[in-house]
Image (cartoon, rainbow, N blue to C red):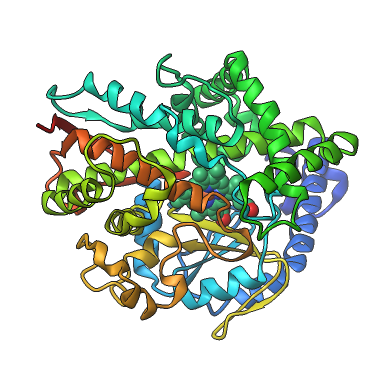
Length: 493
Ligand code: HEM
């Protein structure tokens, strides 16, 4: 009777005690499953240190294989909101398993300081912080072109000022660091739009789990858009390729000349630069592709960040008419109504600088920075094991009530020297901190102050945003307002 039953009923393989009864397909399946299980056990064994250290750290529930990747679904706004939500839910430190990768998310300044000192990640090779750019850029007419471009928008209602400012930033970064004109403002260059779209797609690719798999990503419109933007960027006018070539040399100069890190004189620096360039030409260590990648990073890092911060600062001025008036009065006081801004003016624009710093507190371009933990790091309460990564929540640290009373009150005087002295240095890190912080910090501040000083003398800025909290943020790798940098401008009499 039993045999009769076995012959007519298709039992699942695990109910067939005799392997002779298994079909070839079932045997193959068994072999595949066993291999997968062995691989998984082996892999988990290799990860045991991570599991051990992560066990006592709070964090969202992690499913097998995907971990907590389900928290990072949706559009950039949704993903960003979920991440900030997690930072609020788990103050201090929490862990996130993303597939098999372990991330520690921290926002406490004391952790950030330790992590930046000890954990490091490979990145762009520019290891020195020289003023390699041309200080004279400020005398060049790009700022005046910006003011002229803005006349097209004056008294015409609200618009997104980033579209105008980003072209100015592209012009100035190319001209001041390489002496090459790309005329982005006058030719209405689409370059910043491509950059923005690339950022958005890269952000989605990082966070949305299934986009990690090439075969899925390549089937989407995102992949098509991505290659289209990249191709466009590469084809972008002879001027940009000229820029790239010159910037390659410029980066090489900076990379190779660590010894002159403290030299102040531009003349001497230029002289050294020529020598270094010669050495580089004779003995290059970078492949062409590596250099092009570094160059792209540099142009993008240099233009988009300053454009975004300047645009946020103009929106903040629209929101705070009284503070805008203070900036205006200072600029008139220091520079007067008509004269072009000169480098020597900038250190005197103290209030304007505080205004920009406060803008960067509430709208830090990089809302988060990530570091790979290369050796175990003891942060006091926990040990972060090598092989994990740390995500430092800059935005969260900048708006933490513990360090910033009434955090959404826009108050540039938080950056008076006596106030700054009271705070831990890592409570405010818009340019990151430690050995891999921003190399364009000084240039960025100068560029933004020049822009503000030029624009504010000609135009009064308004915005329809009513409060800072109304500006919903999203992240396209860099922080962006979900509804745009909305301002309207009125010509000052
Ligand atoms: C307001 C303006 C700027 C802000 C807020 C800003 C912010 C940052 C931050 C937070 C980082 C660290 C990123 C990380 O750790 O993952 C960074 C790195 C970097 N920034 Fe900036 N940046 C600004 C302007 C600039 C400018 C003008 C340049 C170029 C001229 C520049 C070039 C770079 C480069 C090359 C790096 C990578 C440095 C390295 O890895 O060693 N940035 N920036």
